[in-house]
Image (cartoon, rainbow, N blue to C red; front, side, top):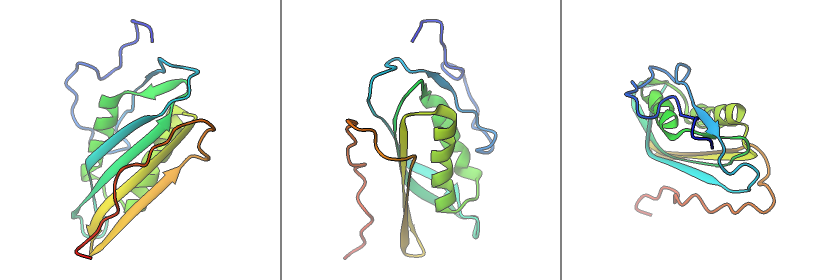
Length: 152
């Protein structure tokens, strides 16, 4: 990456966007373009709102991707994920929507997201999405989040 590329949000005070649609993701050139490697972001305290009750839902999100031309700037991703705090959405829509937006805008070789949602009504809901088959030769570790277990 050249010294002249400065991510838009880096070093600035940035208010939390009021919605995921308003949130702007920033991408910078991949400093290892042409190499096959994986990047992982974990958001263990992700929050959105239940569209039925308006109550908060909590999840541990794990986003894995193999960059191509660009990488996502982490502060903009943090602000984007934080913008879901006041967003109503079902677990499935929220998880898959985050994965699809990142994949569409960043255009990585491959991307997957695991949404490990804490129980609502006694039922944990885990949601997984990936863009396609794992590229040959890419080391993809387990996401490291165990399934929810009650007392059983």
